[in-house]
Amino acid sequence: MSDRCPSLSEHLMTQLVGLHGVLGRSDHRAATGMLADVLGPAGQRSLDEPGQWFSDVADDGTPLEFSLAFDHAKEPTLRLLTEAVGADPGKYANQLAALACLDSWRDRYHLSTERLDRVRDLFLPDDNQGLFSMWLSLVFRSSGLPRVKVYFDPEAQGPHRAGDLVAEGLRRMGLGAAYPTLLAHTGRPDRVGGDRFSFFALDLHEDSASRVKVYVSHRDGTADDAVLAARAVPGVDDDEVREFVAEIGGPGPFDSRPLISSYTFVDGDTDRPSGYSLYIPIRAYVADDAVARRRVGRLLDRYGYDASLLDAAIAVLTDRSLSSGSGLIAHVSLRFGAGVPGVTMYLSSEAYAVAPPRPDAEALVALSDGGGRRRVDA
Ligand code: TRP
Image 1 (cartoon, rainbow, N blue to C red):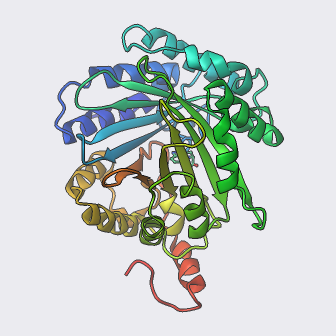
Image 2 (image 1 turned 90 degrees about the vertical axis):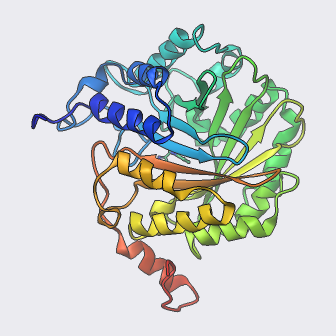
């Protein structure tokens, strides 16, 4: 091996191929080809040059985050959340780059942009005021074509318009009656930060007639906010939500990075969503990744999932010790609904940087825990 610093593309491709190996999949051509499309010329830059675009997808600005989803009914799923990077990057250039990717994938992967076109004028104004204009999620299962989702920023026309955009976006998907349900379960007015709509997402697969997801961030939220949010969906057990929050996030308060709820709408839904997921930004509430790994291990055990796959994935992504940094495990989510919940772990590539351990994160949590000194990760 030479001492030359790898390019962004080399770094991410090695990880992507390694993750396919962990999942026992030998054919990674669709995934590596799509990643090359998404990175474009930005992929060729050496990692020792600063990236030209600091993406909010990951804390170190890498325009990609991996995730590994466990679900009893199926093989684990590998997903990439990405921001396509334009040649002269910026929100608008990146939007054009993302649309060009969709164009080039349309026939091969049976995508339809018809539903995207229905909401384009809402979420993709030329002078986008959100954090980003459009992200792509690429989903790889052990068989079948890759699936693609697009994410929009509801604040594309400014924060004050976010509710209107979500309401109108839902209406155009035939889900207008669901908006009041979402409002009734979010946005508690008595809290300092308040809730905000953080993403509006569409599945672009031809056969997914109406898969829409709406995400709500609970700024300064508590487990109670998550419970209230979850009650928008029939059949979610309050205690299971609380247990997940405590096990992964600790006792709170969740006043650093927010807890995030997502609602999933499928064919046949009208006035309420049929799926609920809760995302916990675990990295903000642990001292380091070793603590995060222990917490996630307990969750996986409890639901009967194989934690050794997570360890193998981590070993592909990094050779640092878990206690030497934080944020490799960025979020953990639980999907509630029928049957055993699905668990997803969001894993950083750490292409540009490793965040240092943050012993203060836990110290603060421990102190706020009834004033006691009990360690929350014990
Ligand atoms: N980095 C952003 C955040 O942490 C966006 C993001 C990336 C995100 N992956 C996510 C948000 C998973 C929720 C869940 O907020």
